[in-house]
Amino acid sequence: MGDLTTSIIVPTYNRRSRLQRLLMRLDELHAGGHDFEVLVADDGSTDGTGEMLRGLHVGYSLRLLPAEHAGPCAARNRAMQAASGELLLFLDDDVWPCAGLIERHLELHRRDPWAAAIGPMVPPRDLRLAPWLRWEAAMLQRQYELFASDYAAPTQLHFYTGNASLRRAHALAAGGFDERFTRQEDVEFAYRLLAHGVRFYFLPDAKAEHEPDRTLDGWLHMAYQYGRAAVLMQRKGHPYGRAIAYLETHSRHPLNRLPPHWCVGHPARSRVVMTIFRAALRYRGPAQDRLHRAACSVVYNVQYWQGFADETGLGTKLWDELATQWRALAQSA
Image 1: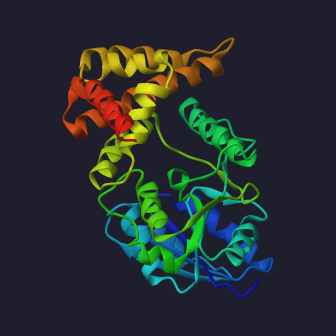
Image 2 (image 1 turned 180 degrees about the vertical axis):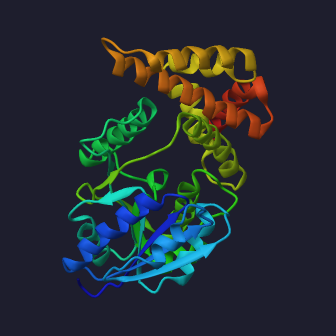
C-alpha cells in the first residue's frame, strides 16, 4: 500500500503463543493488501519461540533475529539495524492490531516525514483483567481521551513503543534505545528524537488490543523500575527533573503524596501498606473496582518513589531534596 516501505519490529521474550497470535493477525492484514516485513527480535526465549517461528508459514517476509537475553532495548536496536523499511512500526508481542492500524500510521508518515506516532493500546472487551492491569489500562485510557479531545497533545513523555512508528532514518540518527534502561527506555529515546526535530502525534484510530499477562509481583517491580529510570534520565541531562519536582511538590493532591512520604525509607511501614493492599485486592463487593483502583494507585506510587529514592541514595531525605529542586527551578524560570 503506497510507496513507503515498512518494517514491523516485534521484540519478544517467552511469549510464544501471544507472539504467534500477533504474527497470524499480521498475515491477515498482509493478505488484505498491506506490504511489509516483520522482524522478530527474540531476546533469548526458552519456551520454544524459535522453533515456532521457523515452522510458521506467512505471506509476508518474516525475519527471526535471535540473541542472548539482553532486554527489549537491545532487541529493538538489533531489529532497527537489520530493517530494510523506511518506516519502523513497533508492536509489542502481546497486542492484536485492529483494522486500520497500519493505514493510519502510513497516512501520517506520508504527510509528515518528521512524525513519531503512537496509537491506543486498549484492553480486549471480552477479557476481565486483574485489578492492577485494569488500573494500568484505565490510566492509559484517560490519557488517550485527553489527546483525542485536543485538551492535551502527546509529547516525548508518551512515546510508548507497544504501538508506535517513526522513520528509520530518524531512529538511527537519534542513536536508538539506551540499553542501560529497563523501563522508560522509549521515553528516554523520545527525548533524543525531540532534539533531532521529530514531532509527536496521537492516532486515535490506530488501535491495538493489548492483553497483558504481568503478575502482581511483576507489576510492583515495574513500578519500582520506573522510579529508578526517572533518576537515570535526570543523570543523562534530560529536562525530566523539573517535571518530577513539580509533580511531587506542587501538582499532586496532598492525600496522594501521603503514602509515599510515610513509606519511602521505612521498610516496616511499606510492609504494612502492602499487607493492606493485598487484602484490598481480595475484596469482592460494592464499589470493589473503585477500591481496587485506589489501592493500586497508592501502591504504585509507593513503589515508584522507593525506586527513585534507592537510585538516588537519598532515602527519607528525598522529599526535602525534591522541594529544594522545585524552588531552585522556579526561581531560575
